[in-house]
Image 1 (cartoon, chains in turn brown, green):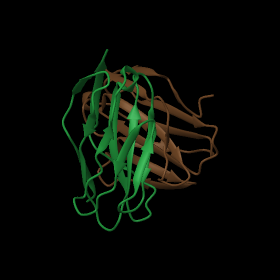
Image 2 (tube, one colour):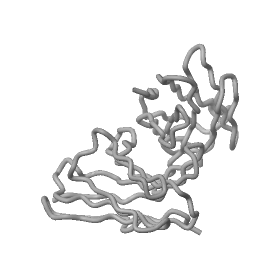
Image 3 (cartoon, one colour):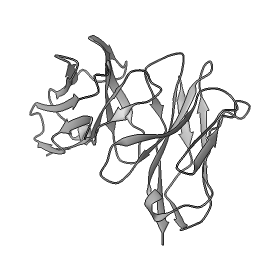
Image 4 (cartoon, one colour):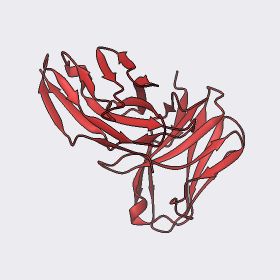
Amino acid sequence: DAMVIQNPRYQVTQFGKPVTLSCSQTLNHNVMYWYQQKSSQAPKLLFHYYDKDFNNEADTPDNFQSRRPNTSFCFLDIRSPGLGDAAMYLCATSIIAEKLFFGSGTQLSVL
Amino acid sequence: GDSVTQMEGPVTLSEEAFLTINCTYTATGYPSLFWYVQYPGEGLQLLLKATKADDKGSNKGFEATYRKETTSFHLEKGSVQVSDSAVYFCALSSGGSEKLVFGKGTKLTVNP
């Protein structure tokens, strides 16, 4: 029944070792988002896709990249994770911002 | 830029108590306002929304009224249950944007 699926649920990586987080959707929504959520902080938008159009937030570090090979899948690539990148990463989809559908998130730990 | 400010948590209540979680916003134009809820181990879910001034959003016994004069969208529930224990996020979108701006979230714990 899950409509926005994030894998894995928990990801452990080493300092500086590239890591990829995955998101898939069965809703056929044209907009997909990646948010970073640190403990006791607001979810912070990293970037989003409107169809194939990539929209990067001005303050998203260059270390973070994204790919959307088709409507259903979206990936978050962290090229050289630092300790400060440990967080929950949330994927969401929508048709318009009136209602976002979130996945359960991937908790990233950096050792 | 646009921003949302929520009351600091955590909030701990007894079952059947009255709940208010304050939310104020700063935005250009006339934003749409939302409350999202995150139950333990799950993603965020839309709880309710209001798209113009004086609108009242409601769902599952929760209500919030869009107050343009005070730039507020406070969440209320008359009688909370243990199952309402979760983190509640206030959010806005403005200018027809497909982006949401979230508050920091307020953790609610309801004890039997």
